[in-house]
Length: 165
Length: 169
Image 1: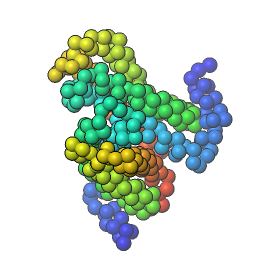
Image 2: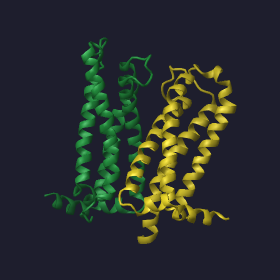
Image 3: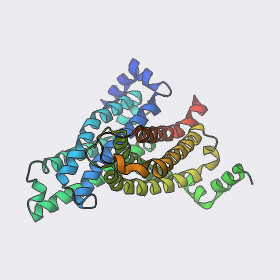
């Protein structure tokens, strides 16, 4: 089924357009810049929850400062990602590393949403009790690791491709 | 001793050879380089946007720069180290790659801009530290920095494509 999808994408006019030099490296550059914004904004919130960044400022305030940047950048990240898939469908869709990356991305975005949810209101969930603080920190550490994994998988896509198109 | 001789020596050094001949070292260092450089750009962009007067204007500039610049410098040290290792694996080729040369020039521009800001413009930071607007010179420095780093990422991405492009069109 994926092979059919790849074949169809390759036959589209959009594919030909994207394949024209230097569209792909340009779109990849925008994609990496978006990764930089999302990665940094999430990481500063995670680092604050863990306790190694601006400790005098409440974690909820740090989240309010940075997470809007994450959520506004994610659509651009997904759009540039989709453009790259249309340009080189085989490289991504017929590559297990790509699907690993998508799974990690789903985990990362869910974790960010849960972390943010636990920081809302005047009495944030992750600060209510000792054990809840622990849960918050654990989620933040997992979130940091998952984002590092996303960057790793993203770079490895280029080295693990099997599809031709 | 000219630069090509040095580049050849670097390429043929044990570190350069080890990275070039290994299947996994180059991709692994590349991943660390991407992680480092995205951290550099992400954290410096916070300071640049504050200088441009676009975001976080209610916080004093001095506070933002002291919060974020330590992260920028740490990440930059990693970017330099991993970048140096990648360079060592193909030093002679990189020196002939226009995007590599552009990236290094932009890095020099970013460094010069930072020095000018730090030693000339930021000396009077007390005046505009908490002002609702930043002076034009500060905005200009922020714009140059942000523009340079965005271009550095772009050139970095093109370095890898350049060889394929001239080889296969």
